[in-house]
Image (tube, rainbow, N blue to C red; front, side, top):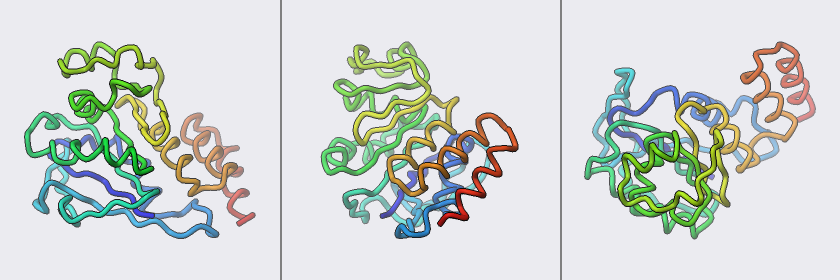
Length: 208
């Protein structure tokens, strides 16, 4: 299994912080499961600068990627999704979804999917229904919009930019990379900030 993180200029750093940290470190993953590789991809392999001013260089160009069933494509929020050089990755999303590849889109990436028509027949969320209607004139999926932090429709996961934790939770849950009790303790720890969930988290790892 491989997880591909799409890199583009003005990428919203905070929206991918939880998921990339766990995918890259694997610190809480079920050790009986095969490891996952996190690969940064871009329209090119030229460095992009995040919203926080951090330069990230993609490991590989998207043209050279062969997605396989069970892989993950993570599309972060950014202010540059409307730029033509980012359409290539969005163009392949409909095909990926038919091949049981997990696609996670948060914040501005949901606008790019709306413009492509990906959300017109699938349950989804974003930063608000009006947000999609404002920035994606092609969008006609309002009847499928749910006012929730994150929505899972089969292998499509969409989220508000205010909900990176919930976004990460659903991606990890979909992959079964953590044992259920580990994932729940991990989520509750960051959600509630209560120390008891840290001990539950560590205890769940001892059962590996």
